Image (cartoon, rainbow, N blue to C red; front, side, top):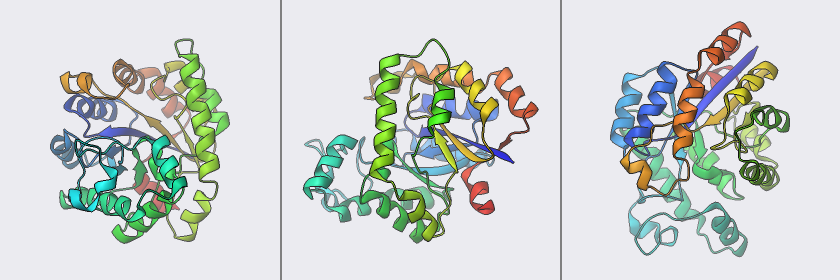
Length: 294
């Protein structure tokens, strides 16, 4: 059986992002989304989750953008001069290497993010990381501990499959330098957390068998998704995506993913893509279903 989780990151970022994710789910192939507990549009994202029971919702663990959810006095080293989270993955990795990142503060913040989501009536299907920070050495263990604490049965392992990455690279409209740079980052994540799958398995936490979408972040093409569906392997694969609509809040935010989000809405709701899912017998699922079958 070939299962596909199509997970939309950044639910709760802005109202426009929420609308795009809702459209890509209701009229397309998106089955799952990752919720930013400190997102500006968190409230409407919660309402979307409540009124869309077919959409699996996980927690998008965040150390890079926005205000903290935990009390500021408990996470002071994670904040910039404006009392906002601003930990880029490269900076966090350097701090981990220098032992200058208090792991307990990361745990306080991520625990608060998960609690906020749960207190709003959502039982998360999985955990993953904004900019994949949950895969950094030492932080993956934190994410696993919190998954066990909160009874969350699955986690994203951001180990991009090279064959699936090659399939997604089909399509002439991609920015080659961006795809190459992101592909290098994907390989780096594999090296940083080589034992992630074994760690999760030892704790009974499920993960997809395959993962893809890092190299094509912001560069997804219709042709690439069609090719991916044609070669999808047996087992469960997660395709990470970032659909959304550009609104005023998104336009002024720090994310580089702007018009590409609208392009992804079009791709993920494309009739040819929906038809090939049906004709190939691909089963669209979320992480909750994947964990039940694990």
